[in-house]
Image 1 (cartoon, rainbow, N blue to C red):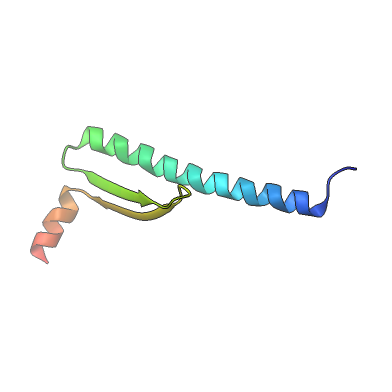
Image 2: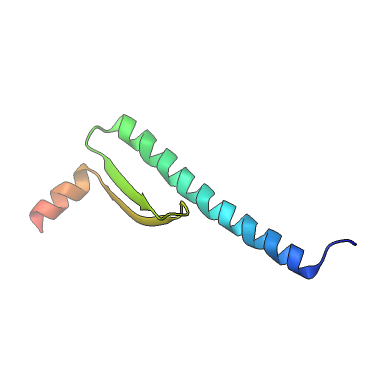
Amino acid sequence: MGCMKMDINNMVRDDRIDLKNYDVDLIVEEFEMKKLGNKDFFYDLVKDDEGRLKHLFWTNPTMIENYKLF
């Protein structure tokens, strides 16, 4: 029977979803490393029911000081 165009479209769709989640994992990994190096670094994120990133917040000491001046 072989491969149909719909099969290819589904595969591309699934790959895109996997890559999006991979990007989120990279951000979390980077923020965890920043947290280890700086006790005042903070981040929080919210994912939806499907594990996709919905909200992301982070701050560091420079941002906190800038906010105080604002």
